[in-house]
Image (cartoon, rainbow, N blue to C red; front, side):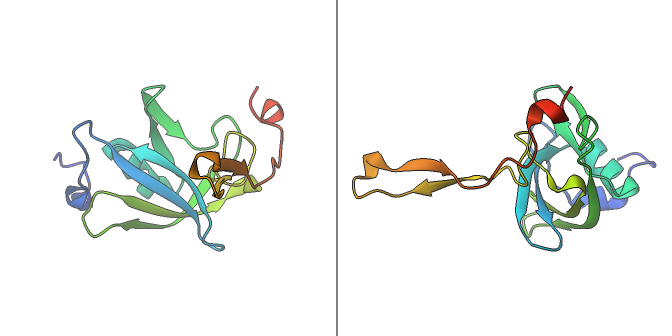
Length: 137
């Protein structure tokens, strides 16, 4: 760990790829908004700036939540679980949209059980608040 690296990062257990899952939760309502990944750099920047920054596995770069959409997550509180391998970010979701589908949360599908288990299916239960075509240009 370099002199510029905060000591508290030593308690964080990153996986073999240098990542840790991070759950974003609305600090007021308690609603789970999304799950993303963080590396040491994104976690340190999040703690320093108070704005959620993640590691985009698909883009292989830092992803500052809201950099394209404007739907920033302002950090209220940062927690580490008992094993040190999952983060919880309690946030204020600016613009009320966390999901790239234009919904408040990425968890907008619920399993509807049927008498025949093979007939059970996922049902969309949360509305689109804004058309993604209008969010991402």
